[in-house]
Image 1: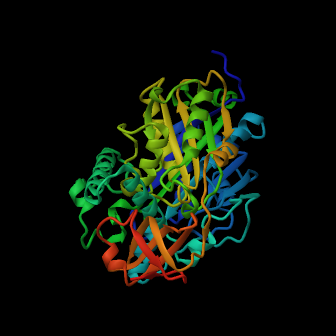
Image 2: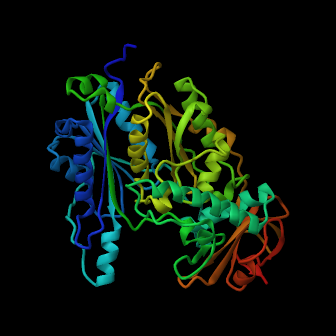
Image 3: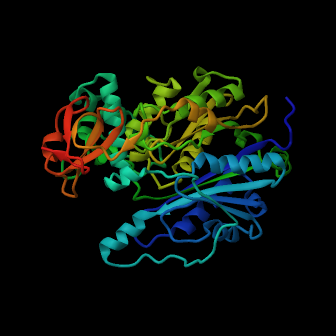
Length: 484
């Protein structure tokens, strides 16, 4: 089959990691990942030909990490793009692929990394982990167009990811009619299966075997964070990991002599940027954007979900995986090739580069198969789906925005201050303190007029930490609290 020479293709995927107390800073790790990607492609000279370097922002302080990377690999004139927090990592890959397809550039790097483990070790030792000072701004900065949290959520101090995802998890359990104990076993079993995959992944940060019982049992090394979540349900972000994807046009890949057994084609990338706060979602546990993005990507590639042999679903928390599996029709399937963000490592804002790099390796070993990689931004707020294969795309590369369709398919509920009186709990969580003790109960409750209110209570925290509270009546005090 003749392929348009402007069709984008991934030719190199590299990762880098370290566990040295005096190891490389984040930018140096990114450069190491780029060099590994060049070797993986069998064409290291492609790095210096990059016309575009795209980097998801990390916890580091660089103003333009892409410029530091570009200079280090010999691509000093490359255009740099920074994706702020709240921008889908899928968007960054799509930006690179679409730029190649349009003919804007021939080679693009999508690279990200963190050195939080190094920083943590330095803090424990009472030293400083040195990092390059840079005061610059990327040529283009991508930022979310809306608020990731509602004003009411911020006022209620419902600002942590674990607290927000816990609300979604409880809502799903209630919708399924599962008991608290049965749900805990189900979630721990899912994470045990992820752990088994991580054990076989040489790039995974934590390959220690962990049983479902260990994952579900609180203890000094597995303290409660926000019911029903313990530490080992949570993405582990104190890692030193980086990844780089080299994308180029098919014509450039051929001219550079990249062996065709290294070529992994993006068939379709679909995404929704529609933003609705968790407390405002009528069905808290659903994410229509994933259903629509999945359908769009599969349709563009001319395949069905059963034709996708390999999967890696974004895995910051169990409910993220469970929601995607529900919307995409994947329940009962193996859902990760890395082992997930709890075990393989969850470098903030660039895990999808890690999972895509691993997917490239998996697909090269299974020529002709399709792989799906997903992305989430914020609290399942934005959804991204990408389809990959070593088989060239018969219909060409497709980039599909389903934001408008997702907005039409996502019913919302007004969340207000809420007057005093009885309300019904839609979902809830109990946030624990640093010692694992119940500290603050948080409920999203439906009031008599059909709107919602968010209420908190430290006095009710211990009582609400156990048992079922979805569907129960509570009394709002009219000032953002609960009467106990």
